[in-house]
Image 1 (cartoon, rainbow, N blue to C red):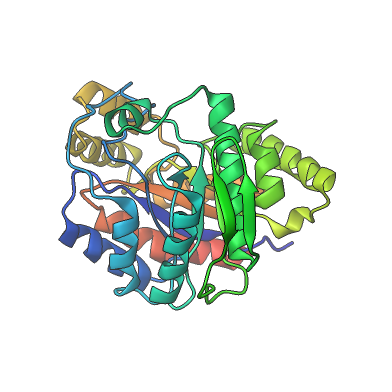
Image 2: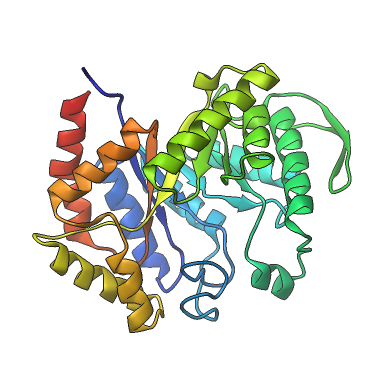
Length: 328
């Protein structure tokens, strides 16, 4: 019995890294034939485990959408997007114009990522409203509705609690007939309902395979409730940074050093690296990816912090991808 194709991609962190390093890794990921190349949307360094639970909050961060336009001119294959754009950071009409410009700059490879926003510190620091989670989901739902209408070529008039539009239009349209919207999050009642209504790509939180399988089935139920084909939505997930070495001990040591570069204390970095299911040998990583694929995952978005690990990148592009391809 064959298995479906599993796309492999990366969410490259724009923190503690130079512009030149970001451009080089984007080129390398694309040149090696990976499917997806995403930035993230933060203004302070994201700390492992949430807003400041580990690591430090002050440090250099390069804006995510700017990175995408740099990559557009240095790549030719990979899908490009921001995983995911906080709904409170930009007006949805502006976000659509940005995604459309990226689609033209990349010759039809853009996706528009959208999320509710979780990092309270950066909202407060830059003057973005940070309401309770239910209202942030309301805001994301309004943004998704406006984005979908504009991307589909409609004239949009909208009067919501968070956003409004009066005869808004998106001209020129994207190159893609349907520029995909990717919505991130795993909330089973609200988030997955919004995904079912508006998204083309669902990006799940870092769940274990069985939790992903369960939420995947819940998303199917939401799709049927709103009259959408569940097969129309690509199922993706952000997964912990991989590190491939001959032994698990070597991989954990190397990943710990990478996380320390991200200003994470040694004990916290070691704990995070030791808990990664993708720090180990080639065979271990292949087995882990197969478990996610068998749970219904269609695309992997690995966290990819600097300094970028070339041996791991080459192992993923070589024996890991070859083994997964042989399954199909």
